[in-house]
Length: 187
Image (tube, rainbow, N blue to C red; front, side, top):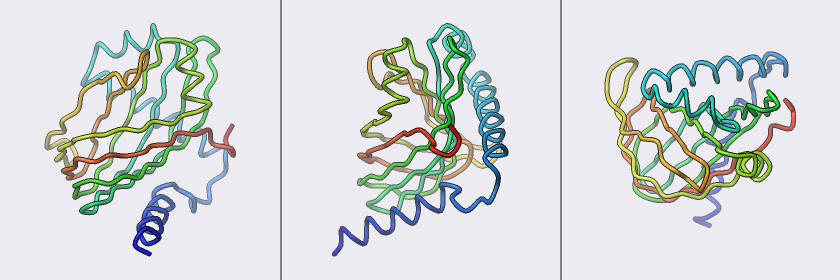
């Protein structure tokens, strides 16, 4: 019974953060994702100027806008984004969801940027998109004030990840399962 409550809570949180009830057209949603991706890259280049060269020379990249919630022993994240193939110039609209267990408390709005070194890892991410991870994180940021502990990490051979906290207050040490998948409505 306890597991069903946990699953219900995480499901409700995911739906709340997924934009399921937005009522906007697919064309408008696609334009918003492109705009958010450009803003995310601009923010990344501000904090990590070397990333611009890495992205330009990569096979492709993916950007995500995410909201994460940590409630004592449980965590959930939901977000939207797009993957971009530098060789074909094709955009692939994507979603993400995450649930986990571990110590945590807080809410944060953050951006995730994946950089793919080659076609194999790009296609694996776009077509399979599963990432399981453990993370420790401390973030305190409101607008332009505050700090977020973030760094580029290699999440698997040929894939680098940047996480940038926009707003929020969170302290967490969790083990999470994250799923990235193609958006069936926008692709």
